[in-house]
Length: 510
Image 1 (cartoon, helix red, strand yellow):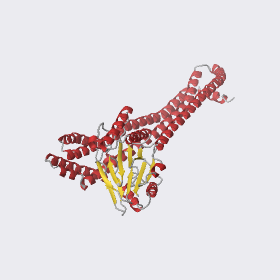
Image 2 (cartoon, one colour):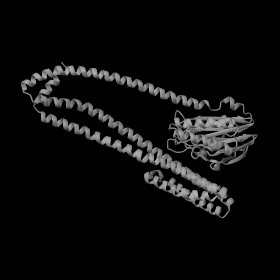
Image 3 (tube, one colour):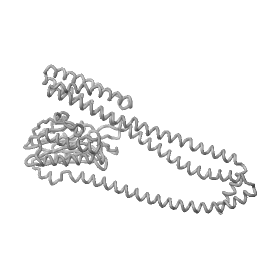
Image 4 (cartoon, one colour):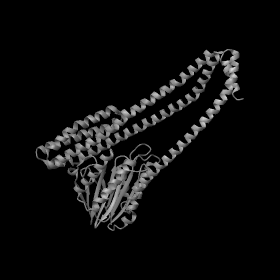
């Protein structure tokens, strides 16, 4: 029988029990030492990711929020002359400095290099100009203060600072991804080593215990016991085989349950994505707008994206909106759908005045995010078009206007609103600006997934290349311009992974 060689080995080994035990102990130590070290390394990586990386990511978000608070405070002080805005600025400015120092202390590599120096210089210049603006406000020179905060120098330094913060956030995200990948690799190694150790040590120590048991008995009795043990071992193997069959059956059932759960989750994500795509404006709706040639494009980085756009016709007025929820995935997609529903409701109720519209929309999203405990916010710009006149309100990415002669204009929306769902009331932050459109003029709306898309060398697509494609194709139809942008963007990205949602809305005055 198959167990006779094993029984013979046990009989021989019983004459050298000390050696067998020593060998088992040594082998156990050799297996458990690397297992313990690997488990400890896995724990350290996990602790570092939780205690440092996620804290760093939260700190980066705090820096962005505080910077927006300071910018809004200086802008509102120049606009209203109210000294409370300077008090608010002085309150939050030390917090921003402390947040930046803490972020640098946690991950200095994310805030080093030539780009970081440019960001720091730009920030220092912004602080100097904002301090000067507050001084002008105290002197009653509101127009000079506004002129300084809207100057090319101020806006240029603001753009450098925003781009630097974006690079730091990207470096932080890459660091977290690398640490998580290292954690998964270490955890896999530890799990594999644990399985190997168990497979090796369980039968080893079973043999050791059997040898020690047989060593106590007389050699003649031991020979008889070995024969009995063979019989008993066969019975135990049969029982163990039956137990293993039951365990295998249970595992098979669990696998089936997991498969059903994965199918359910996949179905839910698919439904959410379908809902998100179903509420987008249809081609038939866009074709009914005779004054504008409109083309739209959306592609999410995951199954459900956080980007949003819509085109709504109310009488002779056309309302075009575009927005971006922080992050992407199911939660971001749900917030985008909530925003779409609220906007449709407000427009249907003919609530179109900029301040009232944005504040009511913000209240709806703020209450829902608080109720759902979502740490999400959303940028959104609304365009109100009628008879060649375009009214802009709300804060989002800049807007490009390519005139019929090929000249391009960039409209910064940072002073036209405030991120939604961050504050309960944003009434004081809402502003509007007007653009006159003529036949052949092209207006381009987009989310940050386009300029921040990366190629294989981790280089951004950027606004400059984006504008070049727009200028080169501005005489084409809106759909042809959109296709040219998407084709150039995809060629630039190549085989690199798309990290953010991509949305593009282009309309052309006929």
